[in-house]
Figure 1 (cartoon, one colour):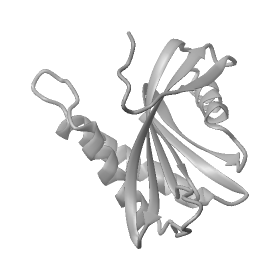
Figure 2: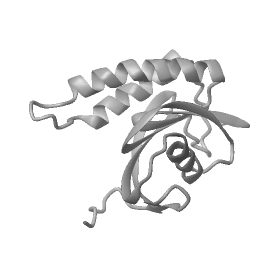
Figure 3: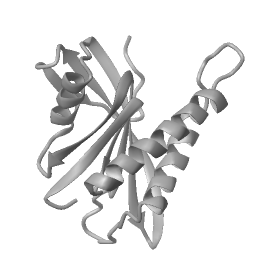
Length: 167
């Protein structure tokens, strides 16, 4: 994804994209509009959010198209060109730059610090990857559990998508 990339966060989502500073601001504006639509269109009459996967898929494809994000096609390396984390937090709007070697834990720590968010306990995270496969954009899901015991103690436990959550 290059030497550095931008992270844009709002509401439930953290988006990692290979875009510039101005594009990050534009993406944040787009996300604000879409997030309002998301809150209205994807809630049932009891206020429960439905079809999050469909929303994220449409969001991912729209971001790639509108911002001209290049997805390389390499038969050996399937590096995603866009990553969306659905983390279920109420994140205030933010955009910031990270280095190419920043881990998700690093990004989440920065989001918690910038948003003055304090979390104690588990966060179940859904990750959506967008990459090119056989000449077409492909959107794929994976899951992992982020354990957050305050802003400085963040780590990830990966989980097989076929496993059930143990509550």
